[in-house]
Image (cartoon, rainbow, N blue to C red; front, side, top):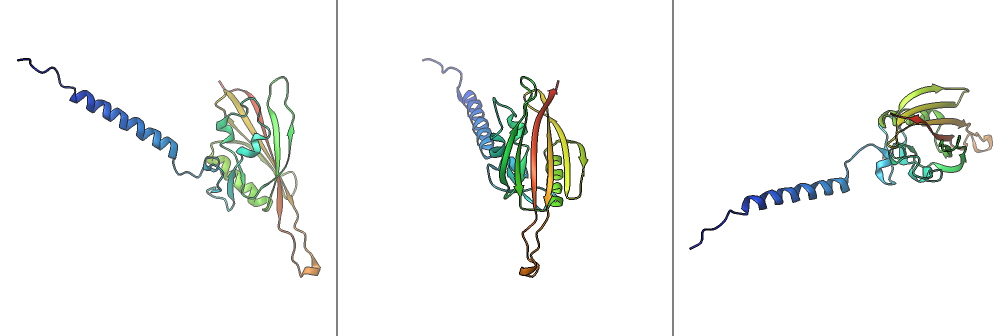
Length: 194
């Protein structure tokens, strides 16, 4: 009569627990978490806490100026534009051999003050360090913020806002076009973050 060997039951329990943990982590990673981060929404508009404007991820706009993995995904995903923004153009002015310096311009169907508030709240939410805020003229503003990128570089974003005055038509009893703001969103590398 042979005696039974060690039981496999404890080993199978450990394997089952490991499988549950791995599968649970994969499901959570696919679903993500609910967040106010505009770029994490995959194209849908989201609310930016503290702003009256909703946000759309800037990913598609920034793809127009992206090159060779720059800017890195974490920088791209931390930026957004107000919902309803219309693409106006881009500028590529890379400095030196590989220094990234590019911009996209959009038109936003909102007054400059609301767009400025949107970006101040967004930059704070997305952990950008605000370096400066200037208002060179009435109805305009310039914001500069910085953060480290996953590529080892410091990244700066310059946001230049120019309000477009509302046109009032006396023939239409004071009705006019809604206020708009042009936004230049400039991204550039500063240097090694280490």
